[in-house]
Length: 229
Image (cartoon, rainbow, N blue to C red; front, top):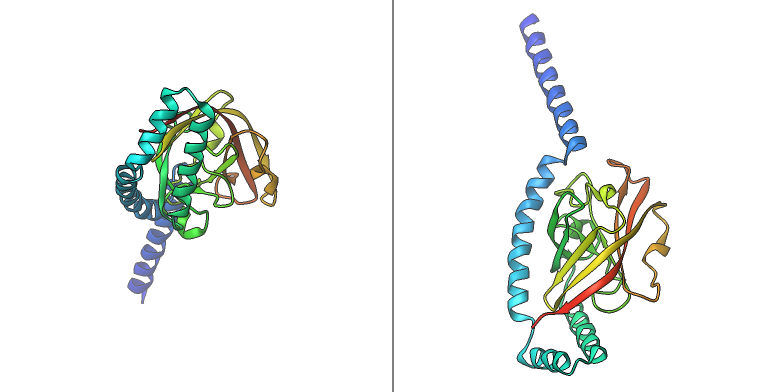
């Protein structure tokens, strides 16, 4: 009986240490099991994005973009970009790769982001709010990401500072944004994704770490765009 009790005690202590270790890793970095899953899925999304990038632009698209560039006609070029952005949306399903987000100021973030902010989509990487615009459409573009689970892409969102650059590389172009400000808001504050009259990028994540009580928001303004040909 004593032996059984001793074995049970050791088992409980070991289980407790494992739980403490898991919580410690999660608080210090990210939840390990979900991160392993998302790492595999990110690799799959990277492959999907490469396929999209190689097939997305038609010969007609390239010709139209090159013509607008040669004629130095920014209005026509912007119209071309906006149409391509909409086509990418129309051809995408929730969870599909859309582009790549790079943010050196966010601990070197460099990940594929996908369409959708539902639970299953955010398990794959940062997710684009479907109700917002796409890069190049001149309106608000919003992307959400986890901070403690599923690779925790936005773990260090609170390290972003005014002037930091965020780049979105799309199958139709590259868009660079400069951080304007950061805010902590209530989860119900939908005003953060409203259009503002210019192209703005909004990044969103739960706040504080390991809690969904608030949202940490980064606002950035488009400073350059380059159509892909």
